[in-house]
Image (tube, rainbow over all chains, first blue to last red; front, side, top):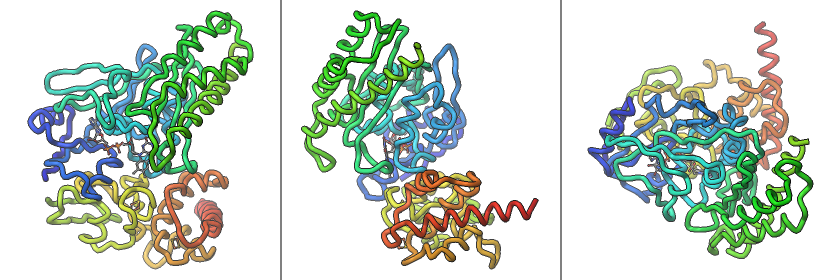
Length: 290
Length: 161
Ligand SMILES: Cc1cc2nc3c(=O)[nH]c(=O)nc-3n(C[C@H](O)[C@H](O)[C@H](O)COP(=O)(O)OP(=O)(O)OC[C@H]3O[C@@H](n4cnc5c(N)ncnc54)[C@H](O)[C@@H]3O)c2cc1C
Ligand code: FES
Ligand code: FES
C-alpha cells in the first residue's frame, strides 16, 4: 500500500488522475474502520488533511462554500447561523471525537443512505463541487446519490467543496436512534422552508437505497400553503395538513428490514418526524412573520 | 514507511509502519506508549482518545501517516513529572476508576472539556463524554470526577493569577 500525502490541491488532483485506485482519506472515520477490520485493502491512501484549501469556508452572494475537509465541529461552531439544518445534522453525528475529525466531504464520499448530512443537502438545494485534473464541475445534491454507497464522482475526481445557500428561513433535521449520541440513523428527515420561492423542501435518509426527496409531500405542502396565502400571513397549520404531509413523506420511502429497525417502523417513524419537524419549522416561521 | 511525529513534546520516529496502520497502533506497539487503550478500533468507545494538534480524536481512526509532523498528546503527557494533572487527581479522588480500561480516554476527553469550559453544566459534561464508554462505573463517579476536576482547575487558575 502507498501513502500519498499531497500538500496542495493541484498535487492531489494530479495524484488522483495518475492513481484512480487511491482511496482519499479525510477524517478517516469511515475509511479507518474499513482498514482496521480488513474490509478494504486499497492500493493507496490519498491523505487530504494537509491541503489548506479544503479546510476553508467562505460566503459569497448568499451561498456558503464549505471546503470538503471542514470538520463537523467547525460547521456547528461557525456556520450554524447561515445553515441551520446542516448544523443540526452535524450536531447529531457520532460523538465529539467523531465530529472533531469527520467531514461533509467524507459523508458524501461514503454516500451511505444513513449519512446525516444528505437529507439536509437535498432540502437546502446544495451543490457538490467536484474537481479533477480535467477541470471542475458542479453536481446538484439531487443528482449526486446513485445507489447504496455509490455517488456520481468519476474515479479521478475529488470533492473540493459543498455549496449551500444561506438562509434565514426555518429548517429542521431530526433522526431516530437508540440514544442521542453515537447513533447511525434508523431513519432521518429534513425539512426546509423556502418562502422566497413559495416552496418547501423535504427529504428522507436511511429509508431507501439512497437519501431522497419526498417530492409529493413537497408539492402537496407547497401547494397548500400557497393556495391559502400562508407564506404572507402564516396561521397555525391544520392537523389534517400535517398528517397528510407525514403520510406522503412515509410513502416516499422504500425502507428495508434490518438490524436497526423494520421497514414498517421506519415508515411510521418518518411520518412522525415529518409532522413534528414541520410543526417546529412552521411555528418558527409564524413567529418570525408575526 | 517512516513516521515522524511529536508525542508529548518529544520528537519521535516510528519505522516499518504499515501504510494502513492507525496512530493508536503506532503509539502502543511502536512507541511504547500503552496508555491509550485499544478496545473497538471503530470509534465507538473512545478509549483510544488522544489530542492531535490539541483536538481530541480517536487515535484508532487516524491513519499513522496523517500524524506525520503533527503534535500528539496522550494520557501519558498530561502529568507534569510526578504531579498528576488536576483531572487525573479528580478521577482518583472521586473513585471514578474501576478496571481502568476506559480511564485514559475519559481523562483526555475530560481534560479537553475543563480546559475549554470553566464551569461545565451536567448536560455539557454528558455531551463531552458521549464518545467514551465505561462498562464498570455506571458513570456517576465519572461525572463527580469531572465536576471536581473543573473546580480544581478553576482554583488552580485563580491561584496562578
Ligand atoms: C463511531 C462513529 C460514529 C459515526 N456516526 C455517524 C453519524 O451519526 N452520522 C453519520 O452520518 N455518519 C456517522 N459516522 C460515519 C462518518 O463519521 C461520516 O460519514 C463522516 O462524515 C465521514 O467523514 P470523514 O472525513 O471521516 O471521511 P473518511 O473516512 O476520510 O472518508 C469517507 C469516504 O469518503 C471518501 N472521501 C473523503 N473525502 C473525500 C473527498 N474530498 N473527495 C472524494 N472522496 C472523499 C473516502 O475515500 C471514503 O470513501 C460515524 C462513524 C463512526 C466511526
Ligand atoms: S479503540 Fe478507538 S474508539 Fe474504541
Ligand atoms: S472502569 Fe472499567 S470500563 Fe470504565
